[in-house]
Image (cartoon, rainbow, N blue to C red; front, side):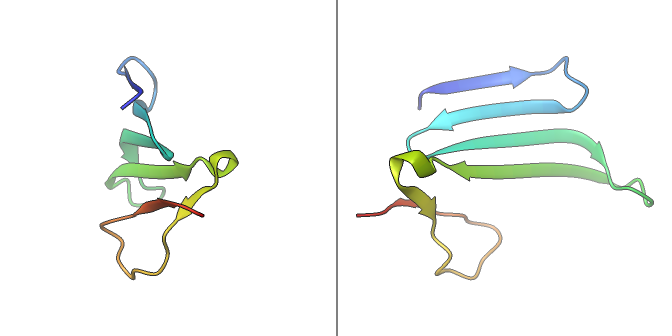
Length: 70
């Protein structure tokens, strides 16, 4: 794992993880518009410049695999 940064003083508490193949941003303390339910957002960004992509052959929302092409 390359970098893990936790921004606990930010408006949206953010855990930023940089690892081989992708960046993962986890935001906690959010609220859904209208209902104000608590929300945690998980964003996975593959390193497309290094030829990585999201493996969309699996139909699951709980496990996102990042694979390198070629």
